[in-house]
Amino acid sequence: MMRRDASMLNAAHDRPRRSRAATFGLLVVAVSVLLILAVLTSVSLGAVHLPIERVARIAAHHIFGVGPVTWTPVDDQIVWTFRAPRALLAALVGAALAVSGAVLQAVARNALADPYVFGISGGASVAAVASLTLGGAVTGGLPLPFAAFTGAALTTLAVYALAQSGGRVTPLRLVLSGVAAGYVLSAVTSFLVLRAAGPDNPLGSVLTWLAGSFGGAQWSYLGVPSVALLLATGWLLARARAMNALLNGEEGAISLGVNVQRFRLELFLLTALLVGVSVAVSGAIGFVGLMIPHVARLLTGSDHRRVLPLCALLGAAFLVTCDVLGRVVIAPTELPVGIVTAVFGGPFFVWLLRRNRRETL
Image (cartoon, rainbow, N blue to C red):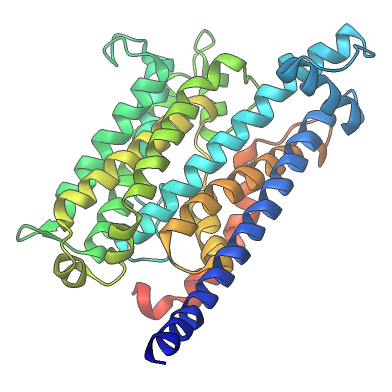
């Protein structure tokens, strides 16, 4: 009798867990479908409109080698050479920025934290712009992605050092240190842009980096962001329980066996990697890391084992959609994707600030 009661009690406890897992699974499937539709729509729209069905067949032919070729070589080039890399790059960058934002909000325990607020995007931008305008000698001959990562990593370490007080790092000091670093790095970037304003300098490329764009995307751009996103997200998922512990405060995390100082530094460096490679291939794009983690937590709760993968999918779908809007809203003129994300992000930031003003003061 006691065994039967115990088994019934365990089944009752397992039922809500299975229900949550099933709900999360359905949510992941739904967001994945939205992402696929966003990518197909992005590839189909442009100066030459192509039906989504034709886009899907061209993609299937290149990926799986299936189906007869019933389209023109021009259609094939438009889809596979020009538009597909752009859409996939937007998805990778969106996922990386969203995951970065989720990590920073957990580290700082602050709803307004994101790579922009912490100055990490600014550090990557300074290094990228310096490489473009001053030449490789200034950045040690590093390729652009590694120069951007170096700038992001150095900024991260500086913010982390500034935030320490008495050997400890507090969430408020982290945010304030990041804001201060962001202002300084913005001034440095402005100086580099002004210096590059001569007729023979690549000012157009610099402005592209500042506004964010996927216009020059190529297949060769996808390798480094893909590897960085997979490795960083995999490591973060393996440490998701420790990230959950950070939500309880430093003392609570320490009581659960987390080496908080070392773990924070590890999270910062991973964020620098994700943001650095993103800025290198797309420029500085704001608000993705601020908005998407909040949407993910509203949909699935605060457990990072679910928040992180959902952030990656939502961030990818969101940035692909923003890129589509930037191309079609005032066509044939193309809006930089950073302007489109700001249109959504500005009002969201104001709403979030008003909603959380007591916690963020």
